[in-house]
Length: 473
Image 1 (cartoon, rainbow, N blue to C red):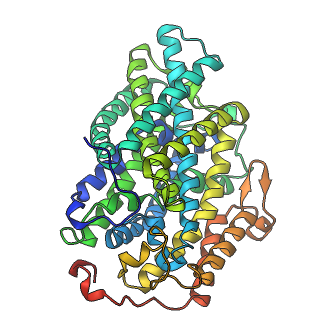
Image 2: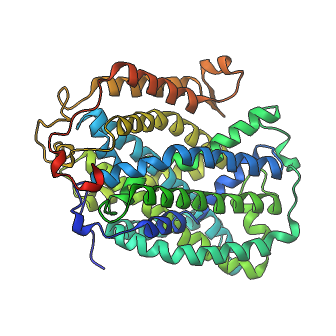
Image 3: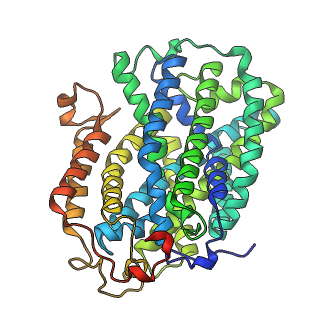
């Protein structure tokens, strides 16, 4: 299969040969991995029981999917990734805001996937073959996972799609076997080792779990969905069909692995750590399937995240090729893996990461969606590529390539979110206004969206609408 040559340029319609089924496959297959499964462990680690954990994950995922899924329609119309598409609202240079947000989101999730997958692999290899659990073993396993991930990401979308189709079936089988393997020790009671509710009361802790474990899943895709829907033709597939496929792919791709993580957390008694207890509680016959899940699943998920990072860096540095950008961000992600392993606990690192990035990313997504509604989904794809061509002008040029009201609105929303967030090592000064409950994503999205509506002008008219495909008018 040839290496993908496209970066963030406009995909010609004859190359847009994917369909809604491919979208479901890639969202399901790539998420059936330990990097997503581990988020299901967060609610039990916060001191919630089984039913409270399940309800928090389901509620957060459904709400997050309802908010995130419409973003998939933007790249269906523009034939480029979402960060570049956001130039319609932020300006062809201002869309760098989306590129940076996407880069940070994908960087964190790539590092987390390799981190957790590598830890489980070392534990499983230790039980199977006596591999020592010292720093050298972790370093070698992390490096191997990172190398395999880079290979898939560099080859591009078609390779990752083929891998996701295989993982959608293979990982489902492995997870079913996992339910059988861990079922004898499953309990619905809260894990005593957590010491009670993390935030002292049920509802604050439940809401934290809803955001950190449930809502964070769909929010992770706010800049990623366009990487896949840009290869779907709006001439051959309707917006309604693509939206339904996005809904289905996100709901299945997030709830199935996360609820498996919740189930195994209670079965393994994983109160303070997930990877170690998961391996320890595994029956001997499941160690090989667990090793396969940790390796293949991690490569599939981290590969897609790394692919997205390469596109975002390619958008920031147009002179770099997509392959060069992908290799560069892979080095940074691997460094983050080692920092996470040696310098932080999994629970603190994950919670801080998802809450901060959710607070920063939500106002960008809100502004981009408001712009989509305002322009009724009609864009000028050629004008979106001005920055990539290192040119000037076009209807999205605004002021020196920036739509200042949109950028300021995002900054106000992001700042509000950071001031209202509650992290293990930091509490924002606005928490007092919400009774100590972390509502950072709600406040950031509300402030950013309202500021944009009040300060930004109406939709930019597309001069060449008659030349666009009928399906996108």
